[in-house]
Length: 596
Image (cartoon, rainbow, N blue to C red):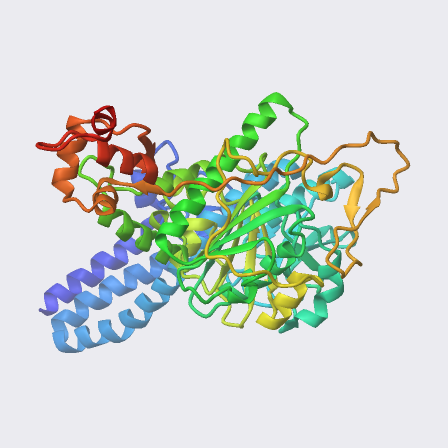
């Protein structure tokens, strides 16, 4: 054993003394890229391409040599003590290495790509150390976190250059940042702005909410207590809320709906609310222009009519590209539950030849793709905005504005995907608003149901509660026509000071003479016959068995049959006439009886 120890010691000592010769002998003539496990201090000291042995610090090589000698000697002297010492030393070392793994990923995935782009903008010579120019802290969500970028002394720093560099850093680094240029030290520092207010009551933003338009509702207060608005026309025609339980989904939605409902009849034609919970938005029950639907059948009919109205508007735009329309908004509460309930309803009436996916999910996808120009908007609420609940990843991407609160890491990765992801706040009402790459932290407005109802009515009287919204089709009289809403006459704006329920308007103050546009009156709608959809519903209406109804329909076609989605549909009158006139053994038809 002593000879083994002595031999190992001599070999280690000789290798250590001749390490430079050994390294040069076995070094590759062409420099190689260093391995990815090496920290950035080793990889980028002065140049980007070095042999991996030559860039290992001397203290690391010495430590590896001494450790090898200690293991050989210790194992020959006392194996038990050697194992114990390895555990005591290797355990903490392994833990420190594990904790530094995220920091290495932070540098590799965030700092290095950012520096490569900024170095080109600043004309920094190649081979410079990143750490000498750019410092990005690992804990970006800390309140006192600072991102520092040193700029060359010959950098001119024009307004365009500074704006480009600032926008690039704010876009690449997650969170909200404010840039401060210091020409005394030739650097730019990014800091977090102050946090939003801890609580925002409706009374605190009443004046701002009165100034908001139906195209840009107020959604909350930002980091400097500035008003943050959504934008249906320019930035985001469709909105999505991805919030965990208790994050304030219904409260946020109540505030937005109250602002839109204030303009019903003066720029907003109707607001359709599909509410699986049945009680979330009862504050708007009876408000003019707001219709709450609480069953799967009502949701299906509403979305079908919503798409039909959208297609009708595009037919009008095809004839007159300058036509304008009042805004229509479809609100879907608890989209995760909505998707499941609609699927259950579809499974109960679906025929074997019908697709597994409910047809209205296809209708909803069309609305998301084409609704912006027709002023048909969708606001959906999710507990987690996954692809299944949204109707597919393509439909999910059509939501231009996303509001996240109490989100999981998986939800952030699905919807945003930037790294590192911000920490989800547990503060009630705190949310992150994402519009493209722009990220803003807001405090949502708390509005009671009583305040929402009073603000939405705007001095009007409650109307009789209807179970569903008025039916709208492409060729039905009574649908909205271009110019039928006075609030959309160019050059005019609604008078928000009126509280008597009348549609008072004041002329625009631009001083331009505009042609008088005549409002097209809506004709009185005619009652529609009852519609029966699906073989099962048709058989129940006639009191027949489903199989008997199928066979009879195959033998004798039903006049006036049409398709609703993927199911056959008929009016009640056509079904009654077909049932009375269909040939049966031992019975005469109505026509034969009349002829005799």
